[in-house]
Image (cartoon, rainbow, N blue to C red; front, side):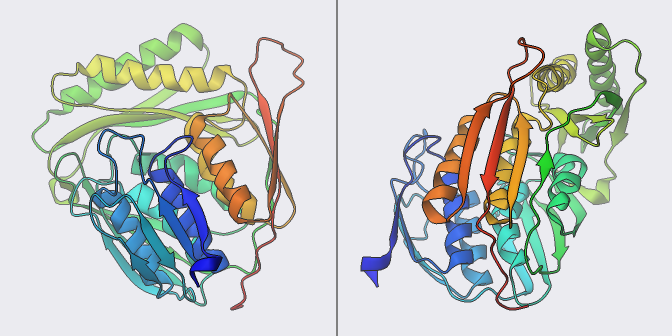
Length: 365
């Protein structure tokens, strides 16, 4: 069997957990046995963290696979997938490890399961170094559903750094195949909205300050649009621990959604949190792409699996995206090309990511 294992170098390019997520999801989908070496070689703490181990374990459970080397700190794993089955699966990082990243690794797999799935994902919902759950629901979900599937994401409890303790329940039905997407027209910004939140011991005033600072920052660039960023205090029974943050979404005339978000932490001024999110949003709007820098790489695996040609106009290609493309091409028959967009406006730094998808067919349906 070992002769047929696909060898993955987990230390190249972005060199982080994303290589693991993309390659194990595709291994599971394609029935390819996998060996990943030098896991997270580029990180200050190399090897598997609780976050990544939980992701590997949920994939193993989803397809009744075999995982070797699955312990914290391990820098090499082998994975032998089985058949993807639906049903209820639980993944718990037992830390503030991101539930959104658990969703990223599991979602492509359960789309090609034999029956509907329910994923109970536990950990951090609003954590550093990962999309916030609000981003997943407000931006990722409506865009990824353009591949012609739907899912339900119920936030049972929010969890923050360092304890985690959050839980989301994701429900989805399998599909026969994924349709390609065409996101090439940015359109004009029609509305800007969002939420600034506090939870636990923090006063609502912080949320109001974040919101006001963000609005002031956006106003300097975009004067004629109503900006609605709600300050909210998460109900105590729906949040575990103490946390704060903000997400701001811009919606365009063609249905594009781009965002900026930021998290509060001890010693960080709440105005600064709001301004940071606003600046990220403005930067994402400036490049003229139809997706923001966080969404870019999350779409790659779906483009690779879809049947037909997908095209996405984006800003500068992130290292995460380059990495996702590299491993999607290594493991599937998908072909990606990235070309500089021939813009009317030369000041715009935009690219077209085009993919001839492999046309994955669900063998169970």
